[in-house]
Image 1 (cartoon, rainbow over the protein chains, first blue to last red):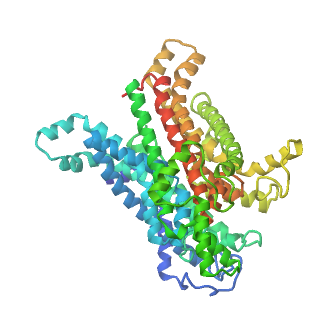
Image 2: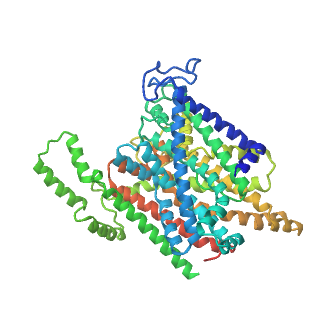
Image 3: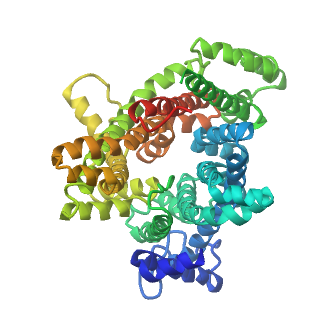
Length: 282
Length: 334
């Protein structure tokens, strides 16, 4: 898998540019470690200043410096989506391989559950949960998004395992006395990894988008800075009507850049792995 | 084949059953969402003084009024009985309007906006996509369109519609910022009404069209470019079959199949996508209805809309599964 990424980096321009943008974002996120301001405090700088040398991205109506607030927001949004991706990968891998390899009634049961998760409307449920929990915290947001994010990919893994199971090498390794676990881990995983990586990045885009959407609707804990809550506060203060465009523009620019580069990484990987693979979701 | 049909229908019914059961039990399991408590709390918040005795009396009468008496299991059975007679119960927050009436008033807005844009963007995207993948492969417009579509695709719908709203109704105040019609307007059938409705629907429709056309365009273009490379197309070209026939019978027919499946799925998922559109643009449809219902803990309405959505999605997938072997002989019943 590392060779695939290395080759892509060397020979694919889109992949290379996207990776460089992501690395720059990481560097920017690291700035949150040396930030002179605490992101939770308000009124530490003069309010509503347009971008200048002192405040490169301007300041908000809450008296925060956007240049130093954005790293926190990006970092938190990124952590949420990364956690969701890791959890959904594990669930999808587990359910998908079991359903695909075992087949029969276990497959039927697992896929019916899978289908049920696919058709459950996520937004009404999130709005409902907000009512119950008061505010959806960081951790519960991760859990909820993970709960809804695994179903498509589990189906994909299942279909891959279904086709791998009928291949020659499956029989060979089975008759040479390898256990099922060994076959799955040693023989199948190399096929599943790259696809999980591509759909994982897609899943990341999805969870970043979900986070932004539901935070902007004010459903999450609005004091934790994320991209969504930044937009939420900007809209609350009617930033655009009162002409404070920099409060909305910079988070949106950064999040769009993040989406674009993640998307191109995902597309180039899946094109390299299997040109016919249609990446679902996003 | 009949066995396949029956099995597929049973699975679909099972999925619908599980979905509806979950939607039934979740709100009822949470004491904080009890509509009776919510109603009494609201009365108290308005400053009405109630002594404990009358609260008790009110509780019992409200429970009776809302049809919430008996254990949760009895309610569940009663719920299925009334569901089969098309009765979704009364709405709690705008009592005693039946849920079905609320849905009936909201549904035309949602269907009108989403079904129209879905179908329109499917048609435009598919046509442009097949052209870009087949005959206009090296033309400039196809390249530019592809770059644009690729740039829009990963941006979440919410961010995109927000950008549109900011650009076209705050920065350049061309379109109204929200709503489905002007405040206090009576909906009658005349030209002025139609123009106002179209004007209000323009921005949400535009946002949906941008996303939709981009997606279908890329899908169709990718499918076409793959099919053009297939052996049977090369062979047909060598056999001197006219370009028109190749295009119609060999390329278009094969590329259209996945697109049709996608459209059916999309139409089923309309109810899921509608909430964001309607909230961003303040459009009076099912999404707004659900959002307000949840905030008022009006779970009969939430359930009604969720049931609609669940049934629509699983019917969509069922129809695809049954139809696709009919259109595409390569797909076999299993």
